[in-house]
Image (cartoon, rainbow, N blue to C red; front, top):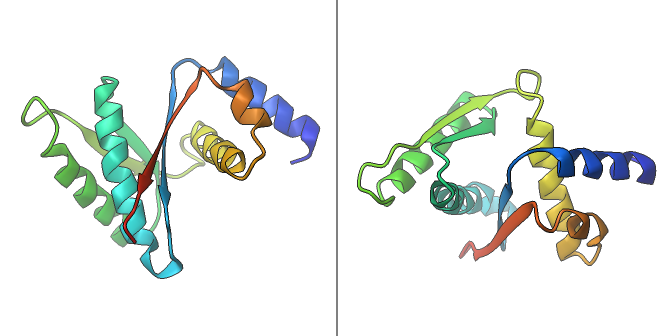
Length: 137
């Protein structure tokens, strides 16, 4: 996207209701991407539960990787309070759920801010809650 389209996108994101919750994990070595993803996903479940969210919709990957995500969320759910708290995860394609573009855009905006390009992150300051974790990878 060019600068005009990027600015238009950030303005649309700012107009969306709610908070964008992002978990940023590092390091993420190529050979341990799934492990790092699982650690981030575990933390995301905890953060979302803290905001009263009980459903997470993830962009679909392969059936095998989707099952791995479900196992990760199931394990994370065991540590939520109160015990046996309800938390559900599902997958769908971006073609089915248009708002998945927002998650991708927010992730890119947060990454850019970490790399010193914080203009768009600053514009969304009160709409983005991001947490950095050490993946241990």
